[in-house]
Image (cartoon, rainbow, N blue to C red; front, side):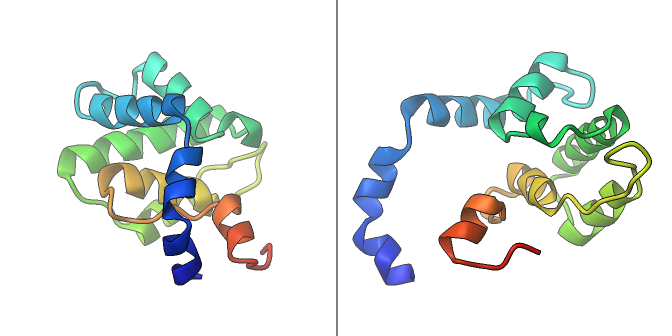
Length: 131
């Protein structure tokens, strides 16, 4: 798979639209400029960019998520396992607790950009089973 990606790297990069890159850059830049735990514009754009709205998560989940993102960014370090535990403790839908692993990896990536994101696009690309 690695060789396939490298052989088609040019096509892959070209397929990413400028709007996507511009919004990603804005989110990354503004992360250190704003208090994302309370900044409604940042949260709105972040949720739209990472397709969080489609998940219909609870307001408490979002509050916790952006507080964790702010705290991790302030400290400059973040632990994926701890983020997963912290987010699981908050009901994501009604009173249900669910593991939102994709969103946890996106939070970690925002603070530590070299960390990968795992979502359905990655799962489907590698033909991994839906857990």
